[in-house]
Length: 208
Image 1 (cartoon, helix red, strand yellow):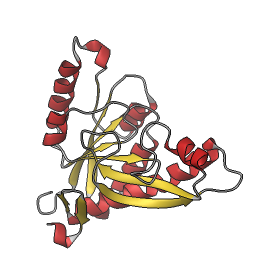
Image 2: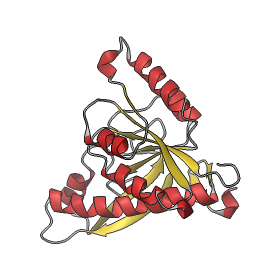
Image 3: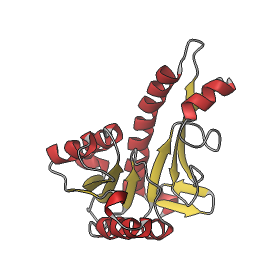
Protein backbone atom coordinates (compact mmCIF):
# COMPACT_ATOMS: atom_id res chain seq x y z
CA UNK A 1 0.00 0.00 0.00
CA UNK A 2 2.84 2.40 0.77
CA UNK A 3 6.57 2.58 0.98
CA UNK A 4 8.51 2.55 4.22
CA UNK A 5 7.75 5.70 6.25
CA UNK A 6 5.51 7.06 3.48
CA UNK A 7 1.93 7.95 4.38
CA UNK A 8 -0.72 6.36 2.19
CA UNK A 9 -1.89 8.74 -0.52
CA UNK A 10 -5.62 9.51 -0.54
CA UNK A 11 -7.61 11.11 -3.35
CA UNK A 12 -11.06 12.12 -2.10
CA UNK A 13 -14.02 12.70 -4.44
CA UNK A 14 -16.87 14.98 -3.34
CA UNK A 15 -20.09 16.46 -4.68
CA UNK A 16 -21.27 18.60 -1.79
CA UNK A 17 -20.33 20.04 1.60
CA UNK A 18 -17.49 17.60 2.29
CA UNK A 19 -18.09 16.73 5.94
CA UNK A 20 -16.52 13.28 5.51
CA UNK A 21 -13.62 14.93 3.68
CA UNK A 22 -13.14 17.31 6.61
CA UNK A 23 -13.04 14.39 9.03
CA UNK A 24 -10.27 12.81 6.95
CA UNK A 25 -8.37 16.10 6.66
CA UNK A 26 -8.51 16.50 10.44
CA UNK A 27 -7.31 12.93 11.00
CA UNK A 28 -4.43 13.36 8.56
CA UNK A 29 -2.95 16.21 10.60
CA UNK A 30 -1.69 13.53 13.00
CA UNK A 31 1.45 11.91 11.52
CA UNK A 32 0.58 8.68 13.33
CA UNK A 33 -2.61 8.37 11.26
CA UNK A 34 -0.55 7.07 8.36
CA UNK A 35 -2.29 8.80 5.45
CA UNK A 36 -2.54 12.16 3.75
CA UNK A 37 -5.02 13.64 1.30
CA UNK A 38 -3.07 14.49 -1.86
CA UNK A 39 -6.00 15.77 -3.98
CA UNK A 40 -9.74 16.39 -3.89
CA UNK A 41 -11.86 16.02 -7.01
CA UNK A 42 -15.48 16.87 -7.78
CA UNK A 43 -18.11 16.61 -10.48
CA UNK A 44 -18.98 20.31 -10.23
CA UNK A 45 -17.40 23.61 -9.27
CA UNK A 46 -18.33 25.97 -6.45
CA UNK A 47 -19.00 23.45 -3.69
CA UNK A 48 -17.93 23.59 -0.07
CA UNK A 49 -16.03 20.33 -0.36
CA UNK A 50 -13.58 21.92 -2.80
CA UNK A 51 -13.36 25.02 -0.62
CA UNK A 52 -12.43 22.89 2.39
CA UNK A 53 -9.59 21.34 0.39
CA UNK A 54 -8.38 24.70 -0.88
CA UNK A 55 -8.31 26.13 2.64
CA UNK A 56 -6.17 23.16 3.67
CA UNK A 57 -3.78 23.72 0.75
CA UNK A 58 -4.83 20.51 -1.03
CA UNK A 59 -4.84 20.45 -4.87
CA UNK A 60 -8.33 20.25 -6.37
CA UNK A 61 -9.95 19.48 -9.70
CA UNK A 62 -13.53 19.52 -10.98
CA UNK A 63 -15.02 18.08 -14.13
CA UNK A 64 -18.73 18.17 -14.96
CA UNK A 65 -20.28 15.47 -17.10
CA UNK A 66 -21.97 18.24 -19.10
CA UNK A 67 -18.55 19.50 -20.22
CA UNK A 68 -18.02 16.33 -22.27
CA UNK A 69 -19.71 15.06 -25.40
CA UNK A 70 -20.02 11.58 -23.92
CA UNK A 71 -20.09 10.00 -20.50
CA UNK A 72 -17.15 7.88 -21.60
CA UNK A 73 -15.15 11.06 -22.16
CA UNK A 74 -15.88 12.21 -18.62
CA UNK A 75 -14.98 8.78 -17.24
CA UNK A 76 -11.64 8.83 -19.05
CA UNK A 77 -10.87 12.38 -17.88
CA UNK A 78 -11.58 11.55 -14.23
CA UNK A 79 -9.44 8.44 -14.45
CA UNK A 80 -6.53 10.41 -15.92
CA UNK A 81 -6.83 13.20 -13.37
CA UNK A 82 -6.89 10.85 -10.40
CA UNK A 83 -4.03 8.78 -11.79
CA UNK A 84 -1.76 11.84 -11.83
CA UNK A 85 -1.85 11.89 -8.02
CA UNK A 86 -0.81 8.22 -7.69
CA UNK A 87 -3.31 7.35 -4.95
CA UNK A 88 -3.10 4.29 -2.77
CA UNK A 89 -6.80 4.70 -1.98
CA UNK A 90 -9.62 6.73 -3.54
CA UNK A 91 -12.41 7.71 -1.14
CA UNK A 92 -15.80 8.56 -2.57
CA UNK A 93 -17.08 10.95 0.11
CA UNK A 94 -20.55 11.99 -0.95
CA UNK A 95 -19.57 11.77 -4.62
CA UNK A 96 -22.81 11.50 -6.57
CA UNK A 97 -21.58 9.92 -9.80
CA UNK A 98 -21.00 6.28 -10.64
CA UNK A 99 -17.40 5.47 -11.54
CA UNK A 100 -16.45 3.46 -14.60
CA UNK A 101 -15.19 -0.10 -14.51
CA UNK A 102 -11.86 1.12 -15.91
CA UNK A 103 -11.55 3.56 -13.00
CA UNK A 104 -12.40 0.88 -10.45
CA UNK A 105 -9.89 -1.52 -12.01
CA UNK A 106 -7.10 1.04 -11.50
CA UNK A 107 -7.83 2.29 -7.99
CA UNK A 108 -8.94 0.77 -4.69
CA UNK A 109 -12.05 2.90 -4.20
CA UNK A 110 -14.04 3.10 -0.97
CA UNK A 111 -17.51 4.50 -0.39
CA UNK A 112 -19.96 4.76 2.50
CA UNK A 113 -23.68 4.08 2.58
CA UNK A 114 -26.13 5.16 5.34
CA UNK A 115 -27.55 1.68 5.96
CA UNK A 116 -26.31 -1.78 6.87
CA UNK A 117 -25.66 -3.28 3.45
CA UNK A 118 -27.01 -5.29 1.75
CA UNK A 119 -30.18 -3.79 3.24
CA UNK A 120 -31.64 -0.57 1.82
CA UNK A 121 -29.29 0.29 -1.06
CA UNK A 122 -29.73 3.40 -3.18
CA UNK A 123 -30.41 7.06 -2.53
CA UNK A 124 -32.78 6.79 0.45
CA UNK A 125 -31.27 4.36 2.95
CA UNK A 126 -32.42 6.11 6.15
CA UNK A 127 -35.92 6.72 4.79
CA UNK A 128 -36.28 3.14 3.61
CA UNK A 129 -35.06 1.77 6.94
CA UNK A 130 -37.50 3.95 8.86
CA UNK A 131 -40.41 2.99 6.63
CA UNK A 132 -39.54 -0.68 6.99
CA UNK A 133 -39.73 -0.38 10.78
CA UNK A 134 -36.28 -1.71 11.60
CA UNK A 135 -35.00 -1.21 15.13
CA UNK A 136 -31.33 -1.00 14.13
CA UNK A 137 -29.79 0.44 10.98
CA UNK A 138 -26.35 2.01 10.53
CA UNK A 139 -23.60 2.75 8.05
CA UNK A 140 -21.40 0.64 5.80
CA UNK A 141 -17.97 1.21 4.29
CA UNK A 142 -17.40 -0.88 1.18
CA UNK A 143 -15.12 -1.38 -1.79
CA UNK A 144 -16.86 0.13 -4.81
CA UNK A 145 -17.78 -2.27 -7.60
CA UNK A 146 -19.95 -1.94 -10.69
CA UNK A 147 -23.19 -2.18 -8.72
CA UNK A 148 -25.00 0.30 -6.49
CA UNK A 149 -23.89 -0.17 -2.86
CA UNK A 150 -23.06 -3.81 -3.61
CA UNK A 151 -19.29 -3.98 -3.13
CA UNK A 152 -17.36 -6.07 -0.58
CA UNK A 153 -17.93 -4.76 2.94
CA UNK A 154 -14.96 -3.24 4.76
CA UNK A 155 -16.65 -2.06 7.97
CA UNK A 156 -20.09 -1.48 9.46
CA UNK A 157 -21.43 0.40 12.47
CA UNK A 158 -24.93 -0.03 13.97
CA UNK A 159 -27.24 2.85 14.84
CA UNK A 160 -30.41 2.29 16.88
CA UNK A 161 -33.65 3.71 15.56
CA UNK A 162 -35.44 5.82 18.20
CA UNK A 163 -39.20 5.74 18.57
CA UNK A 164 -39.47 9.45 17.73
CA UNK A 165 -37.01 9.44 14.83
CA UNK A 166 -37.84 11.08 11.55
CA UNK A 167 -35.66 10.73 8.45
CA UNK A 168 -33.56 13.79 9.25
CA UNK A 169 -32.83 12.90 12.87
CA UNK A 170 -31.98 9.31 12.01
CA UNK A 171 -29.78 10.34 9.10
CA UNK A 172 -27.85 12.82 11.27
CA UNK A 173 -26.98 10.10 13.81
CA UNK A 174 -26.00 7.74 11.00
CA UNK A 175 -23.72 10.39 9.47
CA UNK A 176 -21.97 10.93 12.80
CA UNK A 177 -21.31 7.20 13.14
CA UNK A 178 -20.36 6.97 9.48
CA UNK A 179 -17.64 9.63 9.77
CA UNK A 180 -16.03 7.92 12.75
CA UNK A 181 -16.12 4.54 10.99
CA UNK A 182 -14.61 6.00 7.81
CA UNK A 183 -11.74 7.72 9.62
CA UNK A 184 -10.95 4.63 11.68
CA UNK A 185 -11.03 2.21 8.73
CA UNK A 186 -9.06 4.38 6.32
CA UNK A 187 -6.37 4.90 8.96
CA UNK A 188 -6.14 1.17 9.63
CA UNK A 189 -5.93 0.44 5.90
CA UNK A 190 -3.17 3.04 5.52
CA UNK A 191 -1.15 1.66 8.40
CA UNK A 192 -1.83 -2.06 8.15
CA UNK A 193 -2.88 -2.91 4.58
CA UNK A 194 -5.99 -4.44 3.04
CA UNK A 195 -6.80 -7.61 1.14
CA UNK A 196 -9.98 -8.08 -0.90
CA UNK A 197 -10.70 -11.73 -1.72
CA UNK A 198 -14.06 -11.99 -3.42
CA UNK A 199 -16.61 -10.79 -0.87
CA UNK A 200 -14.17 -11.00 2.03
CA UNK A 201 -12.14 -8.00 3.12
CA UNK A 202 -9.33 -8.17 5.66
CA UNK A 203 -7.49 -5.28 7.30
CA UNK A 204 -4.38 -5.84 9.32
CA UNK A 205 -1.08 -7.68 9.32
CA UNK A 206 -2.67 -10.72 7.69
CA UNK A 207 -3.69 -8.45 4.78
CA UNK A 208 -0.15 -7.65 3.74
